[in-house]
Length: 163
Image (cartoon, rainbow, N blue to C red; front, side, top):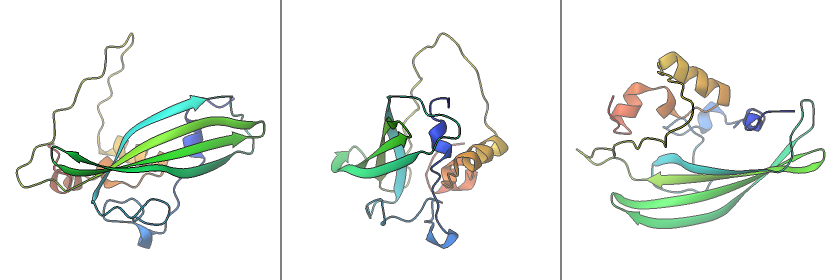
């Protein structure tokens, strides 16, 4: 039986180098709508695990754009895209997964990102201090080429985040 979320390793994004945008993700258009706002971020997820997947089992994924909505935030327009995935194993639907993707304007000159919020307290704790190698390995494992995961100059210069 596969642990939860291991299905992420089976459906890695495949894009030619020439099809990548400046952020390292595939250019907009194609499956994701051609939203004109340049900053793309994962805003949240929801999972419904219905039955386990098993090692060696043939699995498939069907993905749809379930919703696109435009909102006004305190820093300008936001576009939210809801992507719904259905993962099927040999016994049928095994899990559903929803991704919320948000598109935003670039940081304005002098704008500061909001302070991070602490996660709720937990019964256990493990501190991990990421370094460039760990961030690169995470990106390589998930085949996630978004530069925010490994390129410090991009994160501070283009995305506007502090050290």
